[in-house]
Length: 276
Image (cartoon, rainbow, N blue to C red):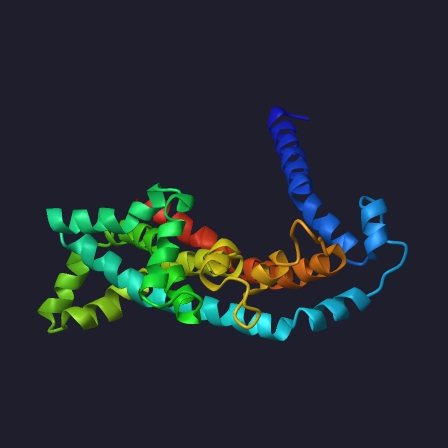
């Protein structure tokens, strides 16, 4: 066996070990989601003595998962739609305006990426309260848009800078307006990085806990899935037999979505690396 085969086999083994380590917690959650409370506590690492979906059904009903899914899908769709509309517009304009002002505005937009969220989350909560949006769906959506926008603009901005401006100038010569040139020429070229950004933001909003708690608190009618699951854990209670099935129910859409969209994430990152 030559050295190249040895290296390939060693690489496969290392990747397999890493995959097992990463998947092990998910496997434990899946296994224990079928157990009653006593069995979870006393035999967490063992396989369930029997497979029953009773706790899944009970969790679905008790948590009112239809309401939670409706809320989470609403927050995710609206946030991602707004990001998809405004982030490429802002990134495009800032990339094409080569001035000190555009550089300053770009720096201000991406500044939250450089500062830990914990340093300004209380200020964000107070600000939302002062403008009357604390505890409202609109306030939570606006907060998500603001938090997701910096990374989106940053990624798209670098991509736009590498699109030849001559393409747009040729369109202007043919009589196209700036808006038409942006929609018909620039925007289609942004598809790889735009899909990557939207997938990342979709997963971020779907799995959000902290911002949902800060803005919406514990209102059952407005909670997302992760906040509702988190609310079942406190110093006084740990409802494992409902929380674990709930985690699996909330994770399945994530896994399906990521499996179908991972090729776009890889394609967008690869395209951005080549263009950069």
